[in-house]
Length: 491
Image 1 (cartoon, rainbow, N blue to C red):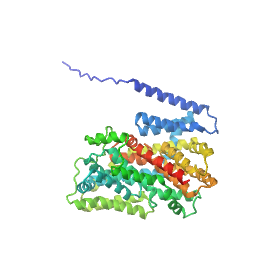
Image 2: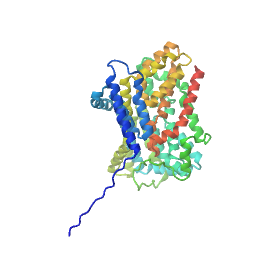
Image 3: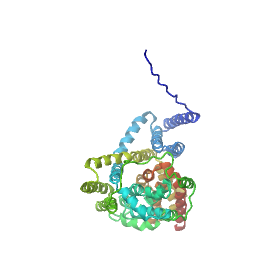
Image 4: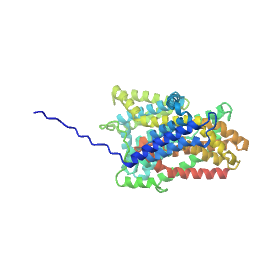
């Protein structure tokens, strides 16, 4: 007698919201393609250049899918540019972005930083540091203050801050039932906002070079002009004050952060839907607590020192730090050479989502540049510019553009040749214009839910980028409003 096994498959059910999303997507494709078909070649897109970015924001808020929103927005923009050749346009933009020097730097830095953190994790060094700090930290407030202080000390780059601090502090904040969203806020708020007011960070080096390349500062004087503008980088100073008040429990939990903290107090520090970075189940701290801490601290010191030695280049720094850590751990026989190489590969894999987000953001920026978004927005507000209103309008407009495109560095390379001649024509001092632009850079990056620092802080802390952005937004708005008031008063 033959027995036949029958496999019963559960049919997939599609609810009304699925069909609604499907029709909305098809409608958007047809709409954007129609705009592209009707557009006259050589004519400016005007307000229509805003549509791909609006689509990205709507897509991300509705679905909480950040990477998909960015790539979809870029595709919609390409449909506007050349609907019959948009597949070739996607290929061209993808290749252009992937061959961009900045993107290559970001991919290598983030990948290798993930690899370094994975070696430190598998070697038990992060766990050793956490256990020592747990014994030193005696209260919830102290754990938040320690996160704040470490964030300021690791000032050389916001990527280093976001990855290293979150990885080393989450076990401590977990023990005091602090939500992962609040940890991500503390880490992110001491990343880009702090980097802009420290003249020996990667941000300072990059923007001072932009000042020179745009003839705003003489050759070799870019950093000097940058330093003169530091007192006017108000968003960095305001955010520093706000995050300190939050760490001291002097500023209450607001909005989504209040819900996150209530959930954490009930024992669930990690939100639903968040993925935990896990490099192994059997990781143990070093038997010698002091040596265990040194195994974390020394690679970090080497990383910062090497970055400093190679002209504030984090890529050179992380490469030297990995080489040092492999040699240092090999001498102690903490991990085999094979295990350390595997750890590097695992760390690179963990960074794939943040890297995909960064690549998607640069693709959207590339498309927005082709549509003339930045030029349109600045030209649209220029009739309302005056010596009194110029700093605050430029701050708010550029903050909105950085928020919408998640491209602070690339955007300013496009905006500087437009903004500085306008400021000079109105008689606005250069250092105030620089302060407004750098404040906007930090504010837009800090508040954007798909910016690199937001995604890295969320990834390291153990929550999604959207969860982190929604809980951080009220505090970012405090900083944005306060900075706007500052520029009104200064002008």
